[in-house]
Image (tube, rainbow, N blue to C red):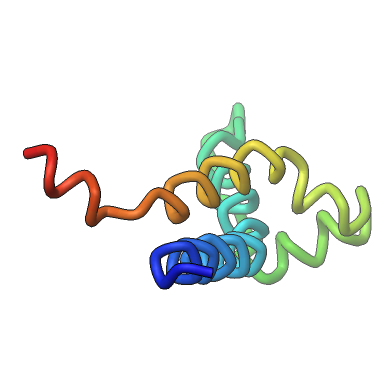
Length: 89
């Protein structure tokens, strides 16, 4: 295998692992930002508490819903080597 291919695959793998770790936090943050409260009260739950609540009420899979398109985008953006693009400009 060429060095560029190995570097591209390593970048894609690193991006996928990072996305798997941070995706539940992104899910909970989005929920907190879009939460509607007619009484204008601030949410009492912190990030960790809300993660626990989602897992308890809806299951662990709910934290990763919509992950596949995100993984494809991350992997594609990490696999494309930057070096050939630099020669075009």
